[in-house]
Image (cartoon, rainbow, N blue to C red; front, top):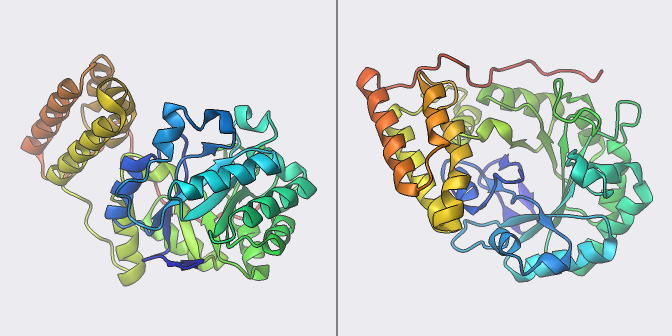
Length: 345
């Protein structure tokens, strides 16, 4: 798959997730097989460009190309300025958020709320594409506002006319949030008309599901979000399965321990001694969710304040796990299960 001048090594893309797809997470997923990773959304409010949070989100030091940055907002001029700012900070692809269903985003007519105003969609897209003529611009949407207003095909036509280079579609409406199951009929219909690459997103949790969605929709790529939280090696498994048709063995306990420690070290360096451990807690919880004796471990983890305390606790947990088995054993919750492709309701 190619976006502008950037040819991806495969068709597996990390979805933008607020508070998750920071530089340490993106780098790890790319190292473990993802062809591209889209950053968590950056505000279009120029008053916040100097904030520590925005500066961190615009920090791409050492990041594997291509660097894709997602921007969010509802004002065409502000969005255009945000695109110019991030391109100047090293973004090689600008992605536009019209898919987030969060109330705090939709209440200011941003994210997926924009799907209700198709003329505004066109103005925003054109403004951004014109603002960064040398930078490919992509778009992420949902299938529509609600089940009675699935307008993804209309948005496709607007996007193509505006010069958008690729379109990612989450198989739910804004009204669905993250409830129920994603449907892929709409994505399939959009792909049948598309002249640009289409990326399928939603409930893609296993290598088998990735292949099934690609085959059913005809999409050029799949985008994986929540399923990769705590399991960044999922991209390696998907890449292997799509290339060979065989299931790659899950990582052993020793490798998962090493990957988590490396991830934590990167988080501590990136966020610092105070914010780093706070950011690390959710990742530690995701890595250990569903593992034997992990509930009490996660509760205790939330009481630890320093990086060293977290590192010691993680190593102790995994060393004890390695005494019992080379492979992790899930008990209190299972990893995401494979589900069949679901048609639109």
